[in-house]
Length: 119
Image (cartoon, rainbow, N blue to C red):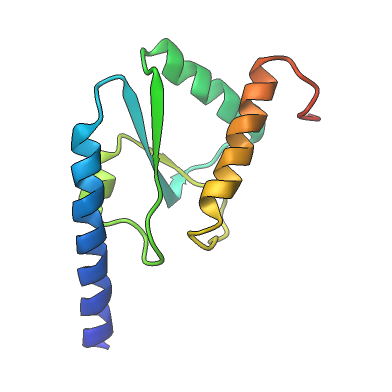
């Protein structure tokens, strides 16, 4: 059991080092958002509003940080001022980018007043 926990932490640390290097390169105009099961949940109109709020706060770009199968390290989470969850269920990490893209498209359509989102 100790070995498995050690390996998980080792993998998270290695992935975290790579992610932290990318985060360091982000400018101050980038909102860094960690995808984390303990993050804030929104319905689609709330998410759309949250993205508008980030824009008003001066962020011109978004960076969504998706961890591997073991999640994100505490060091990475501490560098991400925003944490987002796609719900209480745990999703495979490889599905998160696809699901996130659809929600970003939906938010854009809501902000544009398009009927794509049926509230």
